[in-house]
Amino acid sequence: MALRGALSRLSHSSRHFNHTYQQSRAHSVAVLGAPFSKGQKKRGVEHGPKVIRDAGLMERLSNFDFSVHDFGDLNFQHLEEDEPYMDVKFPRTVGAANKKLSAAVRNAVSAGHTLLMLGGDHSLAVGSVSGHAQHSPDLCLIWVDAHADINTPMTSPSGNLHGQPVAFMLKELQDKMPDIPGFSWTKPFLSSRDLVYIGLRDVDPGEYQFLKSFGIQYFTMRDIDRLGIQRVMEVTFDHLLARKQRPIHLSFDIDAFDPSLAPATGTPVNGGLTYREGIYIAEEIHNTGTDHYSYGFHFLWSFLDFLKVFDCLAFESNLSSSWCAGLLSVMDMVEVNPDLGASPEAVEATATLAVDVIASSLGQTREGAHTSMDEIPPGKNDTELRL
Ligand SMILES: NC(=[NH2+])NCCC[C@H](N)C(=O)O
Ligand SMILES: [Mn+2]
Ligand SMILES: [Mn+2]
Image (cartoon, rainbow, N blue to C red; front, side):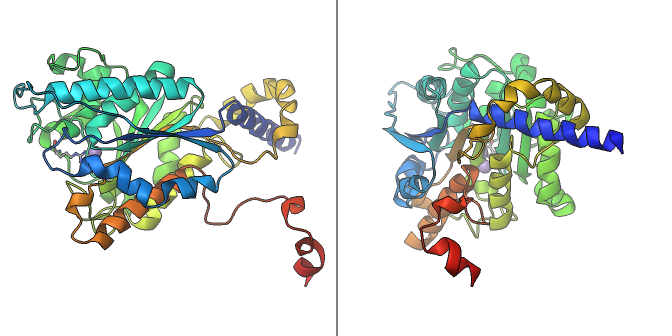
């Protein structure tokens, strides 16, 4: 009984600690458009930022308690002289765009914003994740996608750089990556244990080799069928956050969804996430670092938190203060291509889905908002609610 009491006190203190982590994170979201398409061959994905905005992004974000800063769209150059390197298409153009994006992401995160990057094709993750990592070297990466995007120029079946961004990041692939023109500004910065894939169902032979030989944690659609999305998210967070709470980079490729939900995208693959699975992933990422979460090694961390209990008490008065970023620090939403929808409705459905995922990642809930009683308008709190 006494042990029970001590344990519950310890785990209670861990809640306080988690709150202090959130409170130290900024309460503002920056939006940055990256209208870029040279990481693949289909036109139209450069209009992704526009259609996601047109689907009501800023209005949706204005419902939250954080401030929103729209940094507009980056301006990318198309280089005239850009011969393929091996089979890789537009290497210098993609390299230069990512260099620019990387600096922008680093600046936004350093200024204290939670950043939302709107693509554009998925090659942009090179810049987005590397810029994030410059500010937060301990980040972890959750990659939600039908594809693993971990090809090297030697294993790529297409030569498209949107199928290769992860290969630029991983330290384990350093000696397998040639010096691709346009990319000398970036060096591998991520360990394979800091990455989890969710939603895979189209993995190339070379990619499969890398996933297996580096022991990367991944969940295919089959794994989601077997385990359920709830268990998948639990294992994801145990894998990434059990040792310590740290910033999350969420790279969300809209083709993770089933093509019936997200038809306007360049490389659709049947058998994707349902609407509810996608929203659940986003909600769980938002919920990281909050009360109801405890990851592996709970006892140990609770004890460490217990040691911190005194400096945490000071934060208690802030606890009611609304919005928390959780651990999400940067989110990419990529591969929405309005030119590939069969109808305006198909395009709108895809873009609205992107907005829904973004809103859930930033705290929109299906149970309604938490409001304290004194925020309910007068007249509604006593008599009417009691009826
Ligand atoms: N971000 C994406 N949609 N990537 C699709 C990649 C398809 C294929 N694996 C390739 O390397 O070309
Ligand atoms: Mn994909
Ligand atoms: Mn992708």
